[in-house]
Image (tube, rainbow, N blue to C red; front, side, top):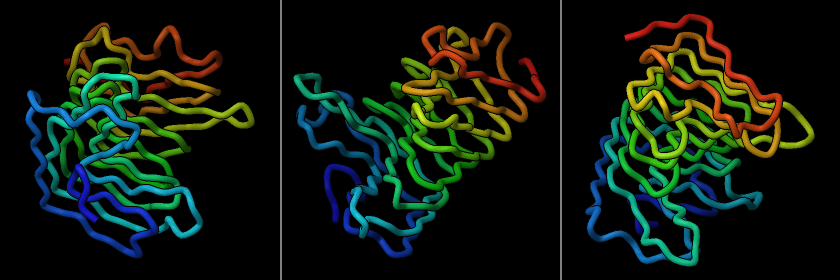
Length: 211
């Protein structure tokens, strides 16, 4: 079903492939402020039938905005609910009101560039990703959403931080979430963990390269 974005799906997808897609919005004409979240690709729903597997590749999504107002400006580049598993690869998201990628479920991200969003990735589960490049995002690079009952871990094989080094790479919320980076390529002075990150949450780096 087509919505405000390219794909707005609920009630499951079976097995789907989305590739070679471009969405470029106009910054001067954001969507109306409403309680209906949307994204360039939104895999929605929390019911038992909201399940499926997917592959998203070769994409360029830009300028996904909602007007300010009484509702939270909940517009992402790509959003996936917990019942959907798959891969997001070989693409970029530039400029969104909320997250470039809002990820629940078992999803692996590889070879993506994320910039100009409130946060590059909002991760709601334990996750493992390949190559991710973060330009400058407005709040933090990655938000890890935690829970009071367990510690969550986000692993990224290679993270390139090419944006403003004063913007923290990571912030944990609502519980302990640890970010593990195999290789970090960044500018000198890159802030790793937000000062407001949930207590006990850490960022560890295996190898660090400066440019």
